Image 1 (cartoon, helix red, strand yellow):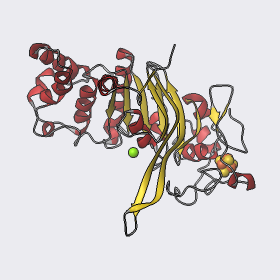
Image 2 (cartoon, helix red, strand yellow; image 1 turned 180 degrees about the vertical axis):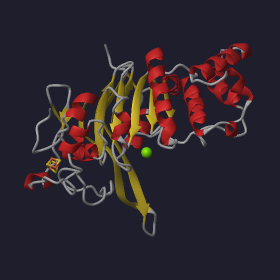
Image 3 (cartoon, protein in one colour; image 1 turned 45 degrees about the horizontal axis):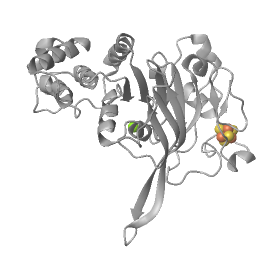
Image 4 (cartoon, protein in one colour; image 1 turned 120 degrees about the horizontal axis):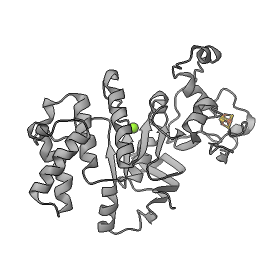
Length: 325
Ligand code: SF4
Ligand code: MG
């Protein structure tokens, strides 16, 4: 069967304008040749530091940002080739939950109105059917149907994120792009929201593209993980394999910062601190994108960017000096 989502060799570049005449003086390479696929009901986490291009990737998948090159296919249909009406139908099947649940809900509307909006946009449900669906959505995300008459400020941050998730589910999407969905929430309620998302995934057969800067959050969440650095995927694989045996020096550094439950494993591993900052995506280093911070970089690393090579266990790795797992 065809994957639900297929991204091929996607590039997103933004012109930098400046100078006296406001002409183009450079280019930000936000996403540089990303390919990935996602099956129905599957969850893929895209992990990397802020500024690595993961949100831009998410926005290009959602059709909110136009790719410079490459393609996004949803259920076999190319997003770019579709008409406006087709694109609207496709867009309903892909929804997004962003980090900040406060700005995601209109403060002047009751939550019932907010949840009803995407249903009204479909244009074929009666008022009674919409009310019923709103009540259903509220209980789906663990809130009381009576809450429909309240306004967003009457809810806590966690409850608001539940509302945003309920709204995203209104039109029965097949894919949710979750862009740092728990990063703005109190640590104490993050696991509640993650558990809700896992539960909804099981019940509704949803696929998730989970964008996060935090590897520890994705560990018990995603089926697969892709690690992004400066616009490129440098390593990917099934979550367990990636956590058990990371091969890319960047993944190893990220993982070394993740607290491990087993004391023995913690003792065996020491923290790898990366020197320097993430280079600017307007001025990526020549050769391997990670070469300016890689603890094991060699001469050849500064000459060419290694291609992604496939390993035997569904893993992929882009490194001149290492083999995929
Ligand atoms: Fe480090 Fe070289 Fe591998 Fe890049 S290719 S990650 S610089 S060892
Ligand atoms: Mg972001």
